[in-house]
Image (cartoon, rainbow, N blue to C red; front, side):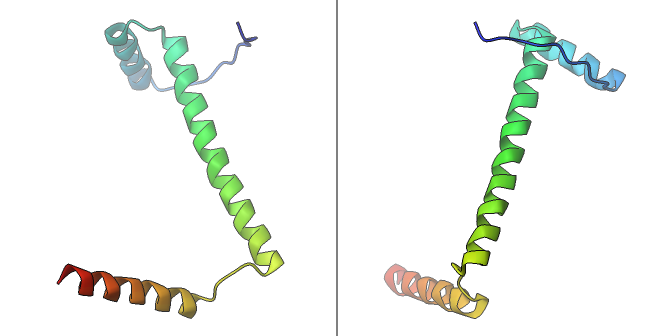
Length: 86
């Protein structure tokens, strides 16, 4: 089993009650559900930050497409899709 540590957080009484209901209905502990929620949030936010950092690195390295060129490509793709749909 992976090592665990304890963390204390403050939540509203309403959220605590909802977490209790969810724990009861899913037969999980409140601690398990809270840890799952925090992990999902942290993973999602880190992915966003890492994507931004990759984008900034691309910009610094000159690996970018000017806005007008990107819009021209998008417009052409839409026009081609419209022709194929007709």
